[in-house]
Image (cartoon, rainbow, N blue to C red; front, side, top):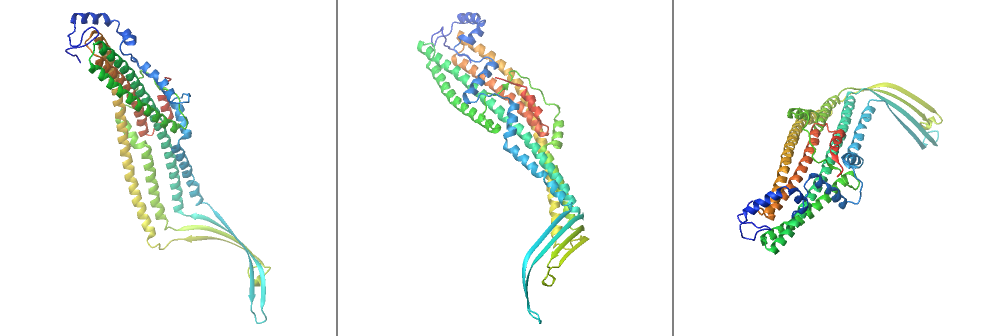
Length: 486
């Protein structure tokens, strides 16, 4: 913004500038602007992304006692051993797998044995005289049951196998979710550190602007308004720095809790990294894959299969059941009149059972299974639509993020040129301190937004893969290859 009356080191307040002197000084100092920006100007600032990132290591060390540095893959492997959600999913998988041998047991022979040992006392009144006796009764039985024809048990076995697949799918989904949560927590730390670095750089710039405003006011080359505006900006920067420090601590604590150990210095995104567009490049390819392969869709499909088999199982519950029965028994002293008599018996036969009337319970269970299956079909369609929408949103998010990155890269260059011009203008008197400070803050903010846009694009790329159930550790490795030590 140009002012009709400006103040500078060569003019008095309220007087118009000497335009001839202004043009001469502007031309003479154009060539020395780079040296002035780095060492002689009223404000020193970070002129490159590399310098901005160089402060992250110092900032990180200031907040954490451990000095162990690690990257995204190392953090993920630590999280695998520590995450409670993944551990719960693994335990659930082991429990689901046990349903298969339980269902198989219902189709295999079962053997039961019983034994009785008792002391008996008997008093018998007889015409020939009373008989008082006591003896020990021993009884042993073994029974074998072999289901020959139980179709509902066959359906139960098939259900258990599908339930095991549910457990495996849930475990795979938990692993994929961990990768996404870990990447989000990791980049949240980098975002908060970049924000703190930006605020600290702005604070340093404002501090020097405030000092310059005070000096210029004392010598009469600046107004009290300049000094007051610089003071207000400085107070605001102090408050923002305190909030940014707290945010860094919170984000680091969240990542530390996820990996189960204190964190040190994190690798950061390589300056000037170029991100690639998602492959395949068509939206329909991603939405189609999401409708078929998304983990939520897979779970809904498996639940629908379980519900369908439940219908058959309930219908077969009123069918004939055929079992092979075999038993053996051994007894001693079975009654008082057979004391010291041993007996052994054995039997083999076929048992056929069929429920004739269940009070309507069997029919009700069939209707219940039919309604549950209809619900599972609706849940499957809902899961497909949700996955398709999530894939579309993530796809648009990645492409929009890449476009935003390109725009911010152009904005960074423009902001740098604007700052150079404002600094030169300040020297020759066509710009005031606030103009320079605004240009600096615009540059710092643009660089911070550019870093965040890159982080968001990477996260959206990982999230896009989760919608199709294709996120693997290799994808984290690809992102990790873009990180370097600060």
